[in-house]
Amino acid sequence: MGLNDIKARIAKAEKTAGRIPGATQLIAVSKVQPNARVEAVLEAGHRLFGENKVQEAAGKWPAFQERFPDAKVHLIGPLQSNKARQAMQLFAAIHSLDRPKLAATLARLAQELGHCPELFVQVNTGEEAQKAGILPAEADAFIKEVRALDLPLKGLMCIPPVDETPSLHFALLAKIAERNGLEGLSMGMSSDFEQAIAFGATHVRVGSAIFGERDPG
Ligand SMILES: *Cc1c(COP(=O)(O)O)cnc(C)c1O
Image (cartoon, rainbow, N blue to C red):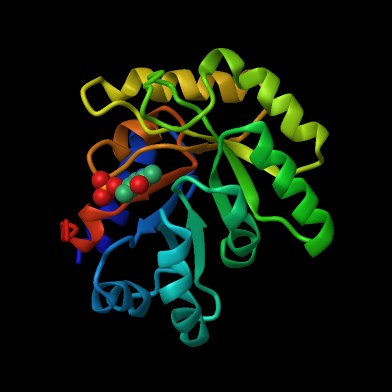
């Protein structure tokens, strides 16, 4: 288990970048991992996790949370509107708000349920056709729309293209956040979280470097 190593590397990256110690939250991405590995990370005291599928999270987290009531899970994968209600009950934050229809659904459910997870707007910084997220040129207008719905917007999230320098995408995301007065930046994974921290990440999403490689099934 690489939890302590990753925590040490985060602390070092914060120091190098002149960030406040503890400014970056570590989301341990537990998708597809065997329960025993997730349990080991819980036993080690870690309490913040990430999952990319509503169904998978619903199948494993309620039982873990009975034993570790302060464990929190963030949704980092795409959300279909018909799973929004379930997602709002399971997750402390949703990092994949990427379209007006989903924003409207979340706003309606927030009224009905009386609470809403913290939200991150996903930005498709690489403008990739196969990837979710709002286009950079449309981000400012969408952020205004989300705010007008009175939703708890915390920040922005991106997943850079695999074959490009991630720093350019982290810088772009940080710039969009800054001009919109948003403090949250969900960016950086196992291979690039230190660079993300240098560009101001407040949430890094690290899976394989903590738990080991995922079994592709
Ligand atoms: C799986 C996943 C991660 C973690 O990836 P690793 O390379 O294992 O650290 C981070 N963000 C998202 C959106 C993911 O789906």
